[in-house]
Each structure stands twice: as C-alpha cells, then as structure tokens.
Length: 310
Image 1 (cartoon, rainbow, N blue to C red):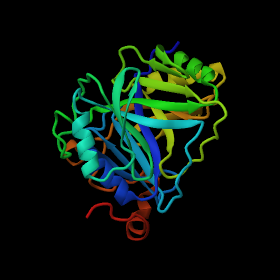
Image 2 (cartoon, rainbow, N blue to C red; image 1 turned 60 degrees about the vertical axis):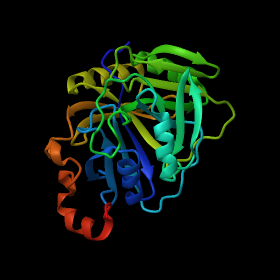
Image 3 (cartoon, helix red, strand yellow; image 1 turned 135 degrees about the horizontal axis):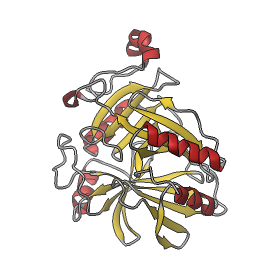
Image 4 (cartoon, rainbow, N blue to C red; image 1 turned 30 degrees about the horizontal axis):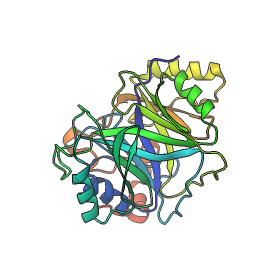
C-alpha cells in the first residue's frame, strides 16, 4: 500500500464559457483565481484555476472553458459531485447567498451523517457544501466572510458500474474504508490534507457519462514532490496500470492513468506551486502562457481568448 498520497490536489472540469465560469467561482463562491493560462493541447482555450490564497493543493478547481461546448450527460465512469468544506453552522448562510444570486439546483441532504447543500454550477456542474471541522485557512478577498468561507475540497463522489475494483485501487493508493452506506463506500486518507475523502457509488444498469460542459475531466491526487511521484508511478506501473510519463504542467508535475471505473486519475506534485511566475499578491491576474505557446500571445489575446472580467 502506498503512503505518498495526501488527498486531492485539484479537480479539472469543462465549461462552455470563460466569463460565466470566472464569475461563478470568484464572485458567487468567493474563491480566488490563482492562475489564468491556456490549455497545453489547445492554446486557444483558457485554463483557469480557482482556490485559496495561494492555490494550496486540495483547494484548487480548474476549468477548460470551450466556447459554446455542449453540456455533458451525467452517468457512470465520472466524478458525479465535487464537494467543498465549509465551517459548522454555515449552510444557512450559503443557502441564502446562493438563492440571492440565482444559483440553480439547491437542495439539502445528509450523507454519512453530514449535512450538505447541493447546488449546480453554470453548466449544470454538480457541487455540494458540507459542514465539517476544518482548520484550513480560507481566501479572505472573495467577498465571503472568513467565518463562512470555503476551506477547500472535502471529497469527490465517483459513480461507477462496479465499485470493487475502484475501491481496491484507492486502498492501494493509501485510502482506508471509513464508512459504508448502501451502494456507496467512503474512503479516507489517514491524516490527509483535508481534501482526503473519496466516495465510490456503485450504480448498476445506468448509462455511461458523456463528457461536455459541466463534466469533470479528471481528478488529481497530491504528492509532496517529484521523488514521491516517481515512487507512486513505479508502484502503479508494476501493478499493471498504464501510466503516462511525467509531464511538466508548469505549476506541478503530473502523471495520468485510467481507473477501473473509467475515471481519469492524475497524481500531481505540490511543487513548484502557482507563485513560480507571479508573486502571491497578483496571482491569476496576468495571462501566463506555457513556453511553447508564448509566440502565440498576440493572436490568442486578440482572436481567441475572450476577456473574462468587466
């Protein structure tokens, strides 16, 4: 069993427009945009990152906003719900805030004894807020009071046709069973980074997901550094997983592999971080381009990348 993984590093999803996406995460949810860059493989598309003040692993959600992308179809083989952590006693504040801002899909529920507030993102993305004791510091500049602000991810909820193989993989990655409720098992990294819970739901007979706007593209798990990442890569490869070579993503190094349930997994390093090319006070303000796309700046800014702020 591996012991290098701390919990989630980031979640990456698809959107249909950069302006609405940016407004939702920075204004509605009060997160900080910590990086404005472009898709490595499609530089005419933004890659936007939102999280806490410095983009701490376990707090960052990222988006590829493909203009006018068709909405995805929920189903098997994907992350069904991305869950954020908020302080105890704050769901009433969040319901009133989200209602006042016209957020759709609001509803209350209880999962594994925890109260949660469900809501939808601008492309029908499935989110929830859960009240837990969480000592992580929030971003203070997003218009949400510190006492109510989002702390980071709590968990990701996976929907698969057969949870057994996915559970086995997660146990190999260092997760331990925390609880079980019907067809859903909760797994947790002991002494993790706060974003250390994965719920795996087995849904037999459901349709497979079709990716599009509002879909999660992949989830990334956190390791401290490149040495730890190489240890994880070797262990996964030796177990039979087809793992990519290490890829430099400017703000972290990444490896990718497909989980048995169909969800794309990434293992990302906590180094070097989002302040490698911007100081902390100005994270996410300037358009930062990967070196191989730097020569495209003028055409990207003038033709492809819409302004995302008024």
